[in-house]
Amino acid sequence: MGLALHLGALGTTVLGGCCLLANRRHAGGVRGLILTLLMVVAMADAAAGAVLLAPIAWSGLLLAGAVVSLAAPGRRAGAGERRVARAHEAIGAIVMAFLLILMTVPAAAAEVATSGHHGGPASALTATGIVGAVGYAAASILIRRTRRVDRVQQASMGLSVLLMGAAVVAG
Image 1 (cartoon, helix red, strand yellow):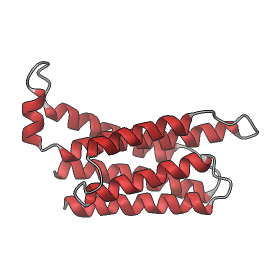
Image 2 (tube, one colour; image 1 turned 180 degrees about the vertical axis):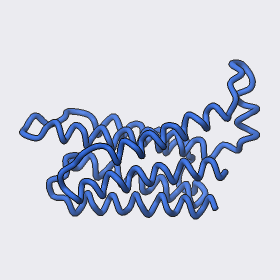
Image 3 (tube, helix red, strand yellow; image 1 turned 30 degrees about the vertical axis):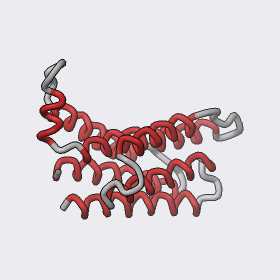
Image 4 (cartoon, helix red, strand yellow; image 1 turned 90 degrees about the vertical axis):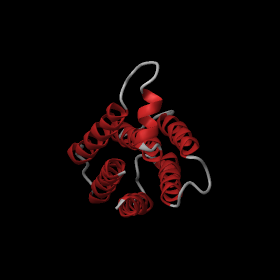
């Protein structure tokens, strides 16, 4: 079940990437494309069993990509839409980075690791990840974009994160 959810999340991210490529006026520009490519490779590697990099390394790269994608927003006409698109992509990468870490830590090990110093249960981390995934998916639907390709890209990213959250729950 987990592999099917991983592959579904990967497929929807690829669909979103195709929408970015098809959209010549994409608000995120080259940075958005690079961030999407980074997400696709990280998810493919996670589905394959972390062959290229450890999940924590992918998470770090996704976080760095999110920061770079938000750097220097445009000042031309339509800059507000570009900022919304970049923020959407960056927040997706941040939630995805968190979920990647949650997917790779077995529940028992996470419970032991978090029951020490601060005493917080691993289920609280999982709940945080799921709330983040559901919130991001809802925001992906609620953000109004005028072009169909933009709406499909947003929805596919939201669905991808939601499927990753489901993979965390499925264990």
